Length: 496
View: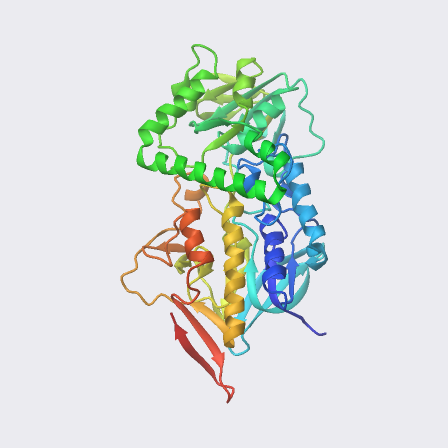
C-alpha cells in the first residue's frame, strides 16, 4: 500500500495547529501539508475542557490569531466562544479539509539518507497502525497530557461517599445544584470553577494548600469596543493587541524588578474586594514573588464576589484524609462535601508523548537544547509550537509558525533538504526551559529540553525580543544545512 507523503505534517488540530495550517497556506502555498489529530474534533484544549465556567485567562486580543481579529465584546472569553473561533477559522480557511481525525501519533523516525520523517499513527478505536512520510514535522500538540490530569494520592479517597471528579474530564451527568462542593486547588482552574459552581451550589469551598496571586481584570476591553465602532476591525484589533502586549510586558517587568511593590499593589486590590476582616495574608498572599508561578486572572472579580455574598469561601490547610462525609484537615477540622473536585493540575508531557529517533538512535529530549524555543539540537527538520508561560500562548505560536515558514522557504530557495540546529559553542551552559516554581512544572521539568545561556538557545519569554529574533533575525545562526550535490552526494555546507 502506498504511503501518503507531505512536505509538512502538523500534529494537533488545536489553537496552534490551526494557526500553523493558516501560515503554511499563506506563506508556503507550494507546500503540501496535513494535520494529524488524535481526537475526533478540532479545538484541542478548548474542546477537551468542559468544566463549568471554563475560560481563557489571557485576553482574546492576544490569545486570538494575528491574522483573524477577535470581534466579540468579551475580552476574557468563555471556552465555547474560543472553540467556535478556532473552528470558524479552520472552516473559513479550508484548513478543516486537511485534518485527519482519530490519528494519534505514536512515533516518528528520521532518515538522513532519505531526508524525511516516517510518522506512525494509531487510527481509530482499533488503534490501526497508519504510516505517513514528510519532509518536515511540526508538533502543535502543546505540552500537557490530554489523557489524564494530575491528582495526588489522597488518603482515604475510597471512603468518600460522594463523587470525586477531575476538571480535565468533566462528566456530563454531574449535578451540583444545592450540593456542598469542595474544590481542591488554587490555580486558574480552581478560581474559575468556584464562582461558576457557586451560582447554584449550596456552598463551595476552595481548599488550597497554599495561596496563589489572583488579579481581577475587566471582562470587556472598553478601548477595543470603542475602536471597533470607528475603525476597520483589523486595524482596531492590531492597536488593542499591541496595547495589551505592552501593558502586560510592563506588568511582568515590574514584577521581576520590583516584586515587593507589585505584591503590595496586588494585596491592596484583593483586600478592597473582600469583606472587612477577611484574612488576606492567609488566603491570598503567596510565599513566592509575583510571576514565580503563573498568575490567576478573574474577570470582574467573580471569585471575590462569590466570597462576599457568602456562597463560597477559602480554606488554606493541608489534607489529612478523605472521610465518608468530606475531608479531614491537618488542623483537625472537617469539610463536609457532596462533591469534591480535584483541580490539582496538569501532567506535562514532552512532544505529545511521540517517540522520536534520528537515523535509528532514540532522541532523548532531556539531553537536547531548545533552539529559539521551537527546535531541538541535533534533530533535523523538526519544530514544536510552544506558547509563552508568562503571556498569551498564541503570541509565541504565531511567531513560531512565521519562522518555520521562513525556514522552509529559505531551504527551498537554496536547495537545502535538511536543517539541523547544532551547538558548536562550548561556553554554552544549560538551565531549565521553564523558569517556574509551580508544582506541575517541577514534577516533569527534568524530562524536557534545556535552554542555553546565550541566544539562539536562550528562551527569553519576551514578545518584543522574539519579534526581533524570529520575524527579522537570521535563519542560519547555529543551523547546519544539507543539500544534495550534482553527483547525488549529501553535503553539509552551511553552519551559521
